Image 1 (tube, one colour):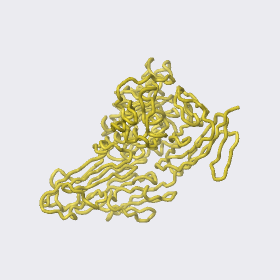
Image 2 (cartoon, rainbow, N blue to C red):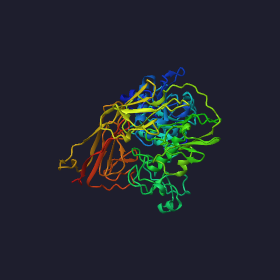
Image 3 (cartoon, rainbow, N blue to C red):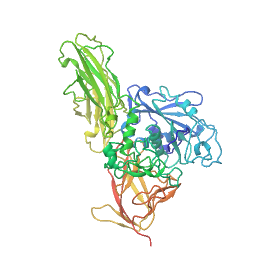
Length: 632
């Protein structure tokens, strides 16, 4: 829910807290050890959860907790872990999690819980952030609108050294089992609800990406009115037809006709901005409409720009404040997305230099420069397929340049610099088989230390950019592998465990009328009414596993149990089940609200399930059939 009000949320799954709260989880880390949790003052302490680089060069995600007593701080840590595990399974956070430092600010609360939970006549609690449902106990408010005291939240977030309002996103978690959240200056979510960890990416979509709700209602259970305003400023809402979008090259015209990441096809679907009619959105459902689905391509593109705008693709570079000599090497250090390598190109006097192959270091001595001065430019860009807007691609979020003046009369003083690693992907946790792993080195002026990679002892050639290695190009066999990196002349060796085996997933169904087995086909389960689905996962590596399912090829839907009980299985019925004004579990075409089509879709449906593990591995989908017969 989008609001500029300010207040905040909570979660469960205590067993994953230790794995997620270790320094560097799923990220990258400088060679120096990450800071150890230490008291900030008598009541609060800052805990580094994931360290991928210097605070002032990263996007910092700061989790605050409210309503957790001193004996419940373990629950807060588990809640943070669960929310992070879900966040890293969702694009574009999965590909750009290496841009993010994560912090938790622990503050013991005098009382447990938050205000007006679940009803307006519920007691007010004495808590550090004064969080409350109903928009802060407003009798005219909405129950699920969970707010926070902005001044208190700012004061706690300011305890994280080096973070400011410009380089961080605050997420406040409330110690509550009631569904709720908000997106404004701060994102809020309730942690104990079955859907709580899916609230966080939705609210960050509001707070960071300025995405709008795609709901066609404001008060649950009550259809919204017809939209009567001008063309929305929202990038994912419009009054235009598909033809008008193409003709005017407006809104999401570049994505029209693509298979949507959240199911169906990118097109034009009526409803959004709390209106049932008169305004259209790109996908039938996405995370900004129905929790459990992915960001569609339009929203994902916005979020890539928002995350990337918080950092600088160029982290460091050779000095350029004065002319440099032609007798040295020149270098740039870049960020390292987990989902793909950044591109680096070089130009001399306006002409592209051939055969650099994305190298991060250029040896000027090999160019044979003519006497005089020359202009050298390095361009660092993100070639992500998640972005199609050329204006966004050319913006500072996705493209940066560094310029040098090269003067052949300048002589570079020599200072001994030993080859060594200066930063690298964290080695304490397994890396996924499709991840990009990196290793940065020192920068002598007279040479470029080469990084040598080996997988299970087999050397891997890396022409050009030897600082990044895209494991997805290696097509590893399932199992665990050992990846090493060495730098010439240095005794230091970096070693990673590569997890090339996705988590195993299984399903449990309630008892069917009968089960049909046919040679060469998945099993078919026959029902004449409601049935339940429980997804189970198992992994041989630490960390949380996200399970997903989809029906008849629709969008992948995150399994969370049941909206009222995370331990209950998901319930499918012919027309769906209404829970707090929303509809869940209609077999066939999903139904989100009571006024959606409830016509049962009898017949045979294909159900698929898959897993996403803590290393980012996505399992191959397995399927079965469900046949729904009319009752009686």
